[in-house]
Amino acid sequence: MTVLLSVQGLTKQFGGLQALTQVTFDLPQGQILGLIGPNGAGKTTLFNVINGVYHPEVGRIIFRDKDVTGTKSYDLAHMGMARTHQIVRPLNELTVRENVMVGACFGRENHNLSKAAGIADEVLEFVGLDSRADQLAGSLNVAQKKRLEMARALAAHPYLLLLDEVLAGLNPSEIDGMIQIVRKIREQGITIIMIEHLMKAVMNISDRIIVLDYGEQIADGTPREIANNPRVIEAYLGNSSLADQLLEEE
Amino acid sequence: MKQLKSIGLWVSLLAVVALGIGPIANRSASLRETTYIIMQVIVLAASLNILLGFTGYVSFGHIVFFGLGGYVGLYLINAQNWPLWSAALAGGLTSGLLAFLLGKAILRLRGAYFALATIGINEAVRAFTNNFDPFGGPIGMTLNFRVYNSYGGAANALWLVYYAVFAIALLAVVLNFMVKNSKFGLGLMAIREDEGAAEVMGVITPNAKTWAFVLSAILPGIVGTLFFFKNGHIEPGDAFRLDYSIEMLVIVMLGGQGSVLGPILGAAGYEGLRNFLLTSPLFKNIQLSVAGALLLVIVLFIPAGAVGWLRRRVPILRKVLA
Image (cartoon, rainbow over all chains, first blue to last red; front, side, top):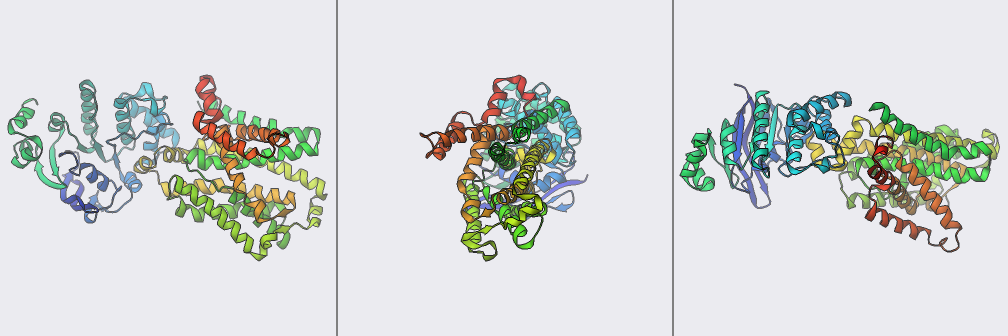
């Protein structure tokens, strides 16, 4: 199994706040890694550091055998990293298709406009937004905007996809739709790290889970191991019967 | 789809031709002078549109590129005996170079800070010319009138300059259209909508912004040389007028930022309004206040400008108005 992403001892501070402390993990190609933890645990910060939005004080990030610590996010995009945002960031005055074309044009494969338009249409069909292609992105509802975030990231044909709470704010049927999409993405061989609060979903989809609490990595293991880990139960899950329940529903 | 898009270009080019053909048809020198200003304003507004409309950066000091181009061009004609056309090109390239050098530094600033920096640059270049002896310092430079002889006399030279500004207005429109329908333009519009998101998607924002700034500076530099050649004289106060910068913003916003037709409609509409105001006894002293009020009304009620408003109200026009 080749390691796609290796995070080694990442530490990030904001003033006096220790946002991340010595986060370390290897992510093999093709895995879905779930990232969970209480609000403010540093999950999105970890994404921002991996993604080049912030630079870490200590630690290294190796992506596809290259040290990419301190690399700008646009360079990482060209190398095959894509992400969605927890709070959606649509390009409001552009059409849905144009939004996705930006991903295809400037992402890993660096396509020209007409090629990008073709990819955009494919990806929009995949996420179920094809009927909205010519609409302005600003006119979509929240669930559609989440799908748009996903489509933009996929259009880059990335090796690694960072999904930041793509299920938050969706209703149950929308959640099922989105989970289907994530599964299909994995089938294409794309490696995924997903931040998620919805335990049922994250326990079901992930091959492996990392738990952050106050910027510290308190657990790393399979969903079953995580659900039975006493520190995780204390910090995040609340009680152990709940953890069992979550696994029962598989 | 492609064909419909190019209809938008032809509509815009036709609009420029319709505005510019008058003086050529009836050989009227006075009509030529008013139309000259409209053409020049189209060039300035369309250039600013690349930065303001496509990239979303508000430049309050864009006239600096016009003034600097004028200075460099006039200096080359006067002191170095360059022909007008290469001097104008050199003026444009100098402005482009200034934009390139400044770009990486000040385009890191966002919003109001960028706008303030552009005002600062305009004032700095004005102060520089005021104290730079080869450019005549505060007195400026006056063109040696014998220069016009090489262009068939003063009257003929004025016609030549008019044809040139007319052609450059058409070029500015084509440039806007090309940028808008290119991959480069898509990157700029992504920056306009959300710079952080654009960066994460792979748009190399520092480079894209710098090239947008350079593109928006070159044509103003060229028409700067043409204008001050026609004028015969240049001085710091005329070359770097902050009120012109603000008028350019009003024009782009009036016509519709981010559209190809917008700067043309804005230029025609605003110049028409200004001519009315300047000749009306009631408004002639407060025409700039009217411009300010107009900007306020646009920002409050039709932020998308005339073209944006039309596109929203009349969906059929959406495909025709580029």
